[in-house]
Image 1 (spheres, rainbow, N blue to C red):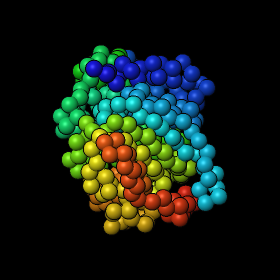
Image 2: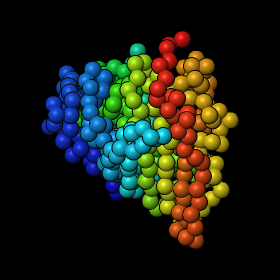
Image 3: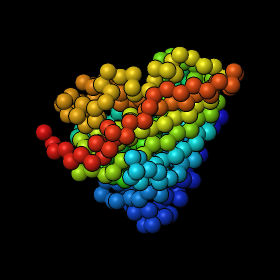
Length: 318
């Protein structure tokens, strides 16, 4: 059985050894937990973002930064290929653990989820769990977790706090931008999971998405990072069984399609519950290779107009 925590550990240790070069900082808490600031008080860098992304997926993706044009303007893109897509995407990278204690709030992703089984339904569906003495969690948060938060996470994972590694990046950081764009394949897998598709038929997966520019506020950052995937994220899936479900997972199926995500977020009083999950968890386009018949299917489209509007906007907090 693949252990996503064990497999991701060498990447974490490499980040710690090269912290100064990567623009990140390692903190050892009083209970022994290790917190790595990848984009809260520290700036991070593109390479730190790629390593953060690899850790999120349990070491089972190969990410790279490639510069490509959008309407004649050059932007960085995350390109990734995925090994063991079900385990990498749903068993590790999926931001499926909401951590809310006292005043601390974070979206938790990464290998630790496979120990804590967050959410349990996902792990029942994919029939996977991890067994490891160490736990590695990736947190999307605006502040660093303290010893109490780390002890809570470690307890849920069944490990000692001294064996917990927490990587943290704010949404409004370069590492945050890279790791959200790097969820593009996981978004498609998550959507297929919701539709009841038998994910065991998926053989290979790959994707790409532009990296959002860093914005001034959390709300702006939430808007632009989501727009990267919603309006310009591409996914390629190879499967042994084609289904009509593939035609329904791209963002252009949503009634809210065509508006920058920030506007929707603002109108929903900055509450995701008031938006609904369809647009926010859908890639712009999908290419499917049915390995049984050899056919190729393509759905969705890239929308440079809305994306560039989002990139260049200077929205103010309302």
